[in-house]
Image 1 (tube, one colour):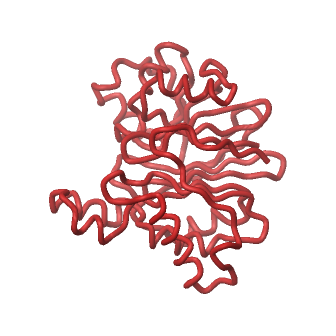
Image 2: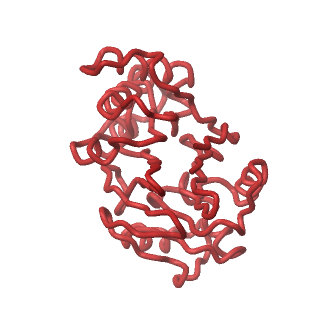
Image 3: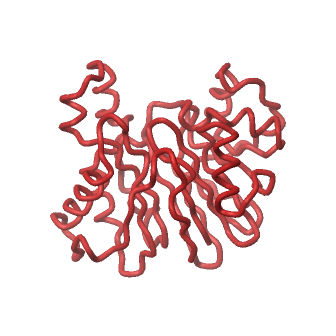
Length: 265
């Protein structure tokens, strides 16, 4: 299997994941041109994608969706609530409703040789999900845009090979920053985004000896720094009730506006 972040941050998100025989995009929150250029840089083409899995309808996850849908006719996998919200988002342009494949949170479905599970998450969107996928005993999850986690999420993230996990903001930077008070409260709330500390606490509950890679993603440009996210998550793991130290697991921070390293395993 493989995973590569084309872009991951508060200004736009697009992840490519798959196998030797099947690739999908998770979100299309940057321009169609940037998605094409990013895929080409890892020797893939947009037309080869077998679907676009959409987590939710916020524009940093669907900005390029309309372009890709109209140009390539790629099937779009979303929950019913997300589909309805996308169809009401004028900025993405007209999308053929027949391209939408409605999925149910918690119910597995298949694309090619990938088995995919949409995981319900707590975020201020219509019907948001994260995605977990597996093939031949290998597994990947992309878990971003959640204000809190629960026992179900901890259970779903057990025994993964690769995890892309949100580390959106540093709480102190956010509180002291220039965002309006209501926006700060939204981000910090249960339907907002995971802080660096919460990300580390969640990671500490799902680590195991055979993790191939952890990728920290969806960092805020205004309220976080890559080095700060990296060190805070490692520290939270060390402080938690688990046997792991900061150097016991391979981890890097996905780039906001560039293609990150491709993970193959």
